[in-house]
Image 1 (cartoon, helix red, strand yellow):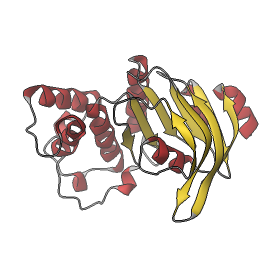
Image 2 (cartoon, one colour):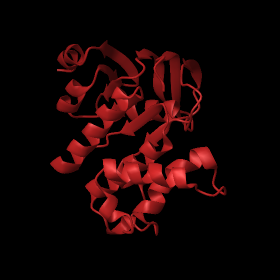
Image 3 (cartoon, one colour):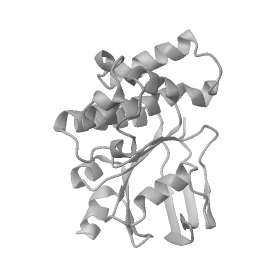
Image 4 (spheres, helix red, strand yellow):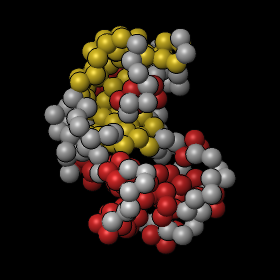
Length: 223
């Protein structure tokens, strides 16, 4: 698992010439939960995309990401509502990081998928299509897919936004469980309660880190 921690030094990144992150330097502790705080447009999603290997830095460095491919959970609104795929098929995709797209899924893979479905309490939805689910159900499916990947680094972009209390509780519980098992978790959030439940916090403004450390101290600075 990913217990060594991640070091970000002088990181700048953006999209199509639009620089979003500016000389970000931060430490993310391994095997713990780090909350990314900040207003819309502060660079939270871009930082997650860099850590997930989706966006290439323009400058600076990120070390300590480990050998396994990071598991990235986007907001459920980012998934096409008409995608013709079932819950079970979606979660199986989490095993592609190990098997590849064309290799056959094994009995062990299916056992992992079944466990992840059960952990997110969506086993009864296995044969349902994604386009028939509520927002909270879809977000739990996306997290189950990420858990099935069994990565040492789990990245989540505001996973509880717009969801009911049941879905938020299930997601928070899963995050704590995987961190307790040694996975490094980084999640963006606007919710002070979610931030307080984290072990570590980064506050971004205008694409720069303005505070980092214990959640209470960072939340005080945010206020």
